[in-house]
Length: 135
Image (cartoon, rainbow, N blue to C red):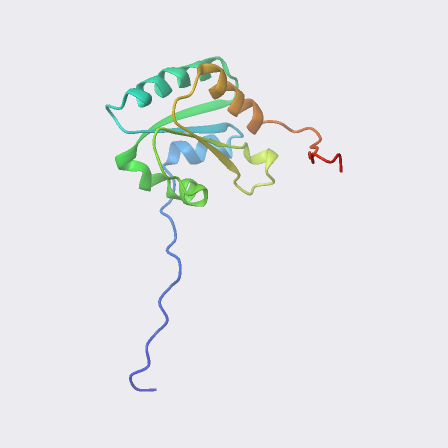
């Protein structure tokens, strides 16, 4: 058919993650990305708080400058990452049946909140729902 337009793709695949991130995820680690914009006061506090992860077994921290966040698009696009600092915690592969699941927290983080985010990602017990009417 002359002059027919071809359909443009509706999505563009994300580039592969950096090899150390993929290795940590495939190795069953809880992957933690701290996305920062160098120079921000809240970024410095978040980076300091993230150092608390040194005491958490099976968690691997990657500090990601905002200018390089596109390298992590395979994770961040699904979260609709909108600001920095951002603490992105990827649930271990064996707890998500191989389907990546992640959470994001924005802004200032305390050491306790960073550790709690990793603990939450590794939770494997029963889940309960809450409804104010007790349903």
